[in-house]
Picture 1 (cartoon, rainbow, N blue to C red):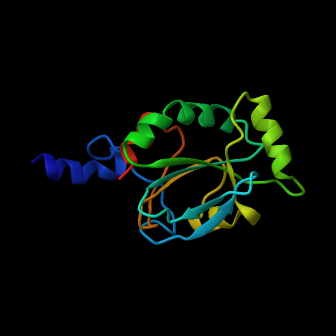
Picture 2: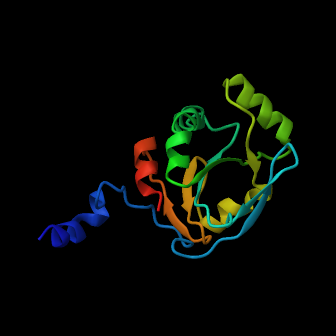
Length: 159
């Protein structure tokens, strides 16, 4: 009976406490990307079996100033579920990674982020900033956060 009730309302409230994903043309599809960090590192999607929580932001996004620190506070819980949190900068036209780093510093946040060149990953996912997406360890897009999600909702959506 619970299963029937759950299936009937899954589109509205989700099952087992998981907030339903936003629709995306890439949902359930494999996505691949290589994103550089300002320090010269590389973030690969998929990430060798590790689910990724991708938090996309831009310097012009006021809402991002709240979502990034909220997820960073839960980083240990995200990692305890076997996933990795990646903050992904969407650079505005003419903006440099150094400008993004300066904004994070002004928000008192670490400058540990990847850069989505030409917004390629956002375009693949069919979403806009601010956005949070979860890609499983095989590189399949499993969840795109709707507006108003909490870090607890994000934790609940990690496969």
